[in-house]
Length: 187
Image 1 (cartoon, rainbow, N blue to C red):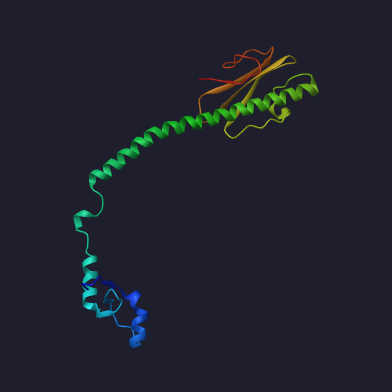
Image 2: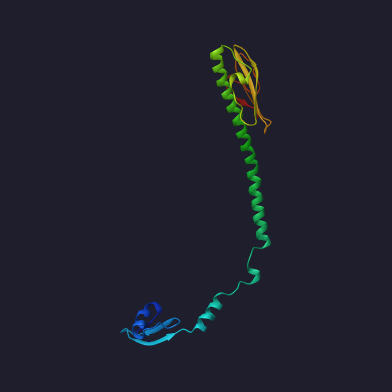
């Protein structure tokens, strides 16, 4: 060992040992090798030593060190609460915007149907069935006035108190609409 040798492990020696003895020794084999690559000693690590090292490496964690503390759990609950307090109002606002978009869309479709009806009959109608207009789920549309020179309608959704309106031509202005031909919703 003093002349620049090293230690070889089982993987490097298995072919050499099989060739010399014809059998493989149990345990981990090591051999000290001199600088000229000659083997000067061959040892095996006993199974008792291996069993003892396995027990030492598989020690249990002390009971107080596993799991989370009450403070850590409370901090997580507070963080989740803060995130929920931020997210729930935004979700509610987004839902209301979606419902109002459905009302606006239905009123725009109603305007298209009214113009188509006017092209065929030279007058507007107050009948949704005559127009073939379909309301989205939760949307209620009401045609307030219709004549040969204009019409007005309002729409609402069951999930919000806000309403939308549209008018065209000489029909009476219906709040919250303030311009002819455009759908406006209350704030």
